[in-house]
Image 1 (spheres, rainbow, N blue to C red):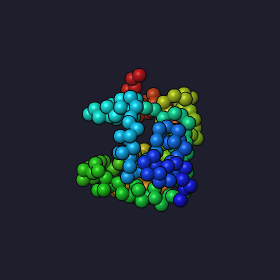
Image 2 (cartoon, helix red, strand yellow):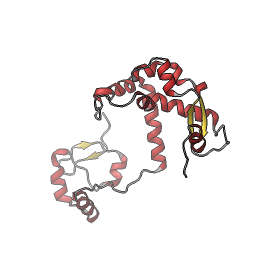
Image 3 (cartoon, rainbow, N blue to C red):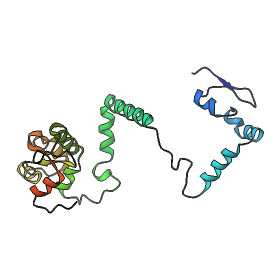
Image 4 (cartoon, rainbow, N blue to C red):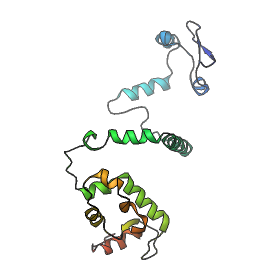
Length: 198
């Protein structure tokens, strides 16, 4: 238990509050006496304005609030460290939202090719191919880079007899980096015989 660093202004009960909280508040009260403490101390005009804003339908007190870059970085590092230490939790979390358990499940109507392209493994494969090449291997551009399958994904799915997403995850040939090159969007359209418009 943490060492108490504050007292309830009504009953004097020892309480712990974070130092950042103590710097912001005008008084500290226990749960039993918080309403009484608010009546005794009142609220500031700024607090009243915040409460009034929060009561309007469709708004909340954090509208327009943005995290600082430092806060975003700390949150990202914390999340990465947590999921690295608990890989089993990440796997179980994924199982809870796959297939029929997903809230947007519509009876498995997605084409297999599209479903495979939506897998996390496919995103990792594309990122790895782009990180390896760092530029378009056709025109040397570094803008709007995309990963291109040398042997088309549909052909690989057919050759290896893949019928489900689970089978696609386990098939190492689909995620072979040697089967990928980095191209810019314009060159990718040209390779597939499509018209590119800026």
